[in-house]
Image 1 (tube, protein in one colour):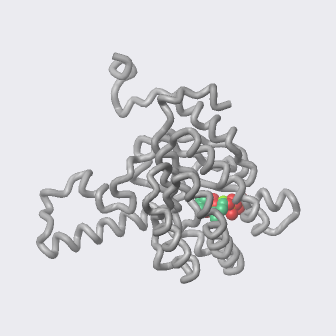
Image 2 (cartoon, helix red, strand yellow):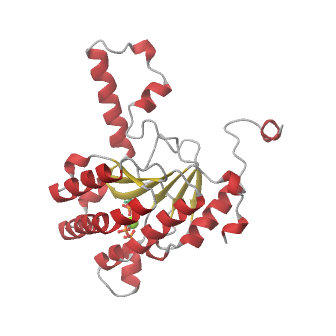
Length: 245
Ligand code: IPE
Ligand code: IPE
Ligand code: MG
C-alpha cells in the first residue's frame, strides 16, 4: 500500500483527532472505556506507520481541555490508560528512535500521569527520529490565551516592544514553538469539526475526514489519508497557475 505514495512528498507533520472510541464500544454493547482500551492498537499503528514513512512529527489529540467535563470515572480510566500506555511503549520508542513530547496544560494532570509523562520525555529526549507529540489537557484557545499572557508579561517587563509583535513572535510563544505546522490533519469518526485542536497551526493544513472509528484505524488508513493529501493542490492564497509555474 505504501507503494502508491510519492515518498518525496510525505508530510513532515501529521496531526490526528483520534475520535470515536465511545461509539465503537457502544456498537459492541460495551462500556466507553472498552473503546479507549482498544484505541491503543490504533495509536501504535499510527506511530509505527508514521515512523516507517519518514514523518517527522505526529501530534495526537489525546485529551482536550473540554474533556475534563466528562464523567469522573471515564476521566480516571483515561488517565490510568495514559500511564499504562506510556510505560508499555517507551521500549518501542527507544528501539525506533522516537522522541515523546507533549503540548497542553500538564499541571492539570493527575500526578501519576504527569510524572510518567515527564520520565518518558526525559528517557526519549535524545532520540531524533519521529517526534510524537501528545496533546493532553490541550485546546487551541487555551494555548493562544497562554501565549498572549506570556507576551504581555514580556512587554510589562520591558523585554519586548508592542511594535515588535508579529506572527512569528506569536508562533514562538505557542506550545508548538519550533515545530512546523502540520501539512495534514486527520479526524476519524465522521465528525467534521476541529473541536478546539491546533487553531493557529491549522491555518493552511489540508484536512482529511474519515468515517473510520479510531479503534479501527490502521496503517492503511494513514496511507489513504496521505494519498488524499498528495492529490490536493496547496495554493496558500495564490492562483493555481502561480503554483504550477
Ligand atoms: C475519542 O473518542 C477519545 C477522547 C476524546 C478522549 P470519544 O471518547 O470522543 O468517542 P465518541 O466520540 O464518544 O464516540
Ligand atoms: C476531540 O474529540 C478531543 C480528542 C480527540 C481528544 P471530542 O470527542 O472531545 O470532540 P467533540 O466533543 O465531539 O467535538
Ligand atoms: Mg468524541
